[in-house]
Structure formats: structure tokens, C-alpha cells
View 1 (cartoon, rainbow, N blue to C red):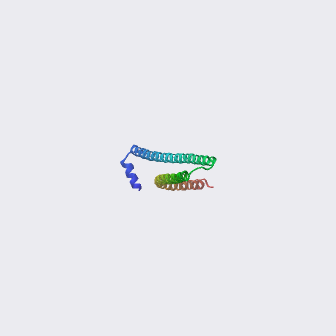
View 2: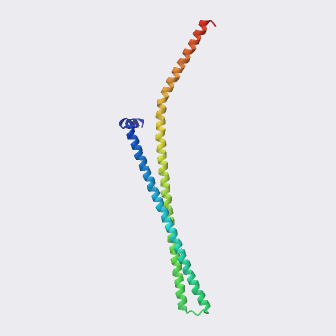
View 3: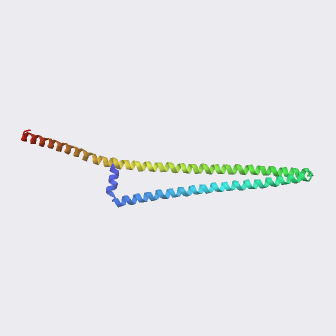
Length: 182
């Protein structure tokens, strides 16, 4: 792996490497912007579904209020409605009930599907970001390891020369002490 990086750095100048890094960062930024756009679209879809559910709820409330008014009118007139009128109202209320139930189920299913899609998009974004960070850390680790390999022989040589220097100082002190007669 090190020889690969050495070949790349040997073949290309530092400006080329910097340019390639800038291009890679630009691509990552573009991907992040696309993900943000997708998530914003998902949020707007969820808002749209929520508004649709509110509208359905309001329409249902209005229809139920109208049905209650008709029932109150019938009671106020002494219940003088024909069985045909009652069966017609009952059928309308049953149709309304079915419509409301269907609408709630559909909006609930749409909201659930949208929530699942958003969750999966967020999960994929997090996984991809973690992968990219892991790769960046691995590359940095390789660079640090490479630098340490270069520094290690220098440190050993410095220790050897330091030891030789200490031995030289010891010999010089020994000669000085023996010469002075201590």
C-alpha cells in the first residue's frame, strides 16, 4: 500500500494531489447536497400528507355536523320522515363512514411508507458517512505509520550517537581525573 502511495506521489506533483483532493471533496459535498434535497422532499411530502389528513378530517367533521343537523330537524318535526328518507340518510352515513375509514387508512399507509423511506435514506446517509470517515482515518493512520517508520531509524541513530557521546564524556572525565590525580 505504501509503494502505491509513493508511486502516486512520485508520478504526480503536490498540486495534482491537492487538486484531486479538492475534486473528491467537491463530489462528497455534491452527494451531501443531493441527500439534503431528497430529505427536504421527503419532509415536504410528509407535510403534504399531513395537510391532506387534516382536510379529510375537516370534511368528515362538516359532513357529520350536517348529518346531526338533519337528525335534529327530524326530531324537531316530530319524526315525520318516511322510511325511504331514513334509509337514504343511513346509506349516506354508511358511505361517509366507509369513505372516511378508507381515507384514514390510505393516509396512514402513505405516511408510514414515507416515514420508512425517510428512515432508510437517513440510515444510508449515516452508514455512508461513517464509511467515509473510517476510510479517512485509515489513510491518516497509514500516513502517520509511514512517518513513524521514517523517524524510528533516526531516533535509534540519535540514541547510539548519544550513547557514544556519553561514553566519550565518561572517558574524558576518566582521563581528566586520572591526569589531575584525584
